[in-house]
Amino acid sequence: MNYLADVLAGSVALFQPSVLGFMVLGFLIGTFFGAVPGLTAVLAIALLLPFTYSLDAVSALVMCASIFMAGMYAGSITATTVNIPGAPSSIMTAIEGYKLMQKGEGANALGHAALGSMIGGAVGAILLLVSMPITAQLALLIKTPGKFSLILFALVVIVVAQRGEVAKAVVAAVLGMMIATIGVDVMQPIPRFAFGTETLVEGIDLMPLIIGTFAISEIMLQATTRDDPALIAAASKAARQLRRRDFIPRWSEIREIGFFTYLKSSLIGYGVGVLPGAGGSMAAFVSYAEAMRVSRKSHEFGKGSREGIAAAETANNSMCGGAFVPMLMFGIPGDPTTAVVLGVLVINGLQPGPQLLTTQTELLGPMMGSLFFSALLLIPLSLFLFGPFFIRIVSISRPPLYTAIGLVALVGAYVATYSMFQMALTLVFGVLAFGLRRSGYPIVTLLLGFILGPSLEEYLRRSLTLSKGDPMIFLTSPDSLAFLVLTAIFVFMLTRPRRAAA
Image (spheres, rainbow, N blue to C red):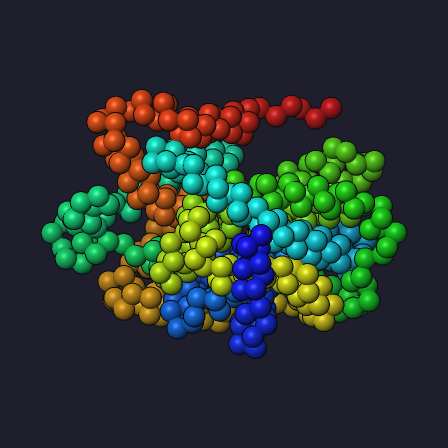
């Protein structure tokens, strides 16, 4: 109970004018980046990450949390109105929402998406608050071999979750781990792969890799495509037709969807979020599939089902709370966005782990509060006030937009490291990521391989040192064996052939 009291007391800082301002600012930024196809919450936080140097830890974490929640919700805006998911997690919403848009009920679809996002985000934040002590106790039971197996589990799940691209995901993850080996050895003060240059002895900073792989590569991808005038015209027409009162879901529709659907989808989303690397897309898909399985109106799915929208949006926003659990307790990002938020923690000198519950409650409280209030208040408020104007974002001309993003990215990379070499690496990684993405390689696995690779190597070598080189330590340690078995179970479940639809 002391933990809950301390966190709730710490959340009072959220209501300081400056901190509250950063939460609202983060929400607006996340909404913009989430609504524009190709721009994501990951990109927003990656661009703003260098500027967190000038912020205190509370303001930085509050802003990142609100960006995360807003970016997850905002993907439903363009998914519904022009059938272009603003985020991968909104793909299922696009299937149903755009069908309703074509029937003239786009505002109603956006209202149900916002309601689901509000419920899921708030429940996910509450579950995060309640489950943290239990997770911390479990974390204390994990020894060195178990930590290696846990990180291995995370990497394997991340790779296997890339259905149809497992081989390419393996290549990208290994490439990320290889890049991470450049610099000083994790166990001994010996330079590796520096090729005789002092610059590489310092290693590769996280910032150039994040900004290069997400910002620069995205600019290059957008530069190879052209604006579709038909989509822009459709977006403008849809915006003119929307009325604010149309965004409020009808009570009869909410009752038809059912409270249990919202609750179950919230639990599914949170559970998926706790799994490292699963992300909002998997949460939305699993929840959508479950809702379709038990629905009394399963025949409406794929033709404009409000229940499908509610299930998908509730789950992907609830995932936000779950994704913070492995990041805060183990230093293992639950999804790409928390991978970047992990960088914010590192920048502020914070070490993820169970000790956060006793030493940093003044930071956890405002961050959890930001997730909760962003979902409960800012999502419905922003949709009601700005809903008719959201879709006009897609009519912004790409050249000035991405030129500005490119300048901010390069300046941000330099400010983060004050190194011209690291800034040049941003361009190098951008070109590399562009080539990988064009060839179908998931760059998310590259980034997580870079982040988790050093810890994987460190715990592997420490475990083998403890066992005097005997690899059986990973099977004789109960915690390690449990994670290895869990890895095998997930590989089986994610790779087994799906049954043909009846």
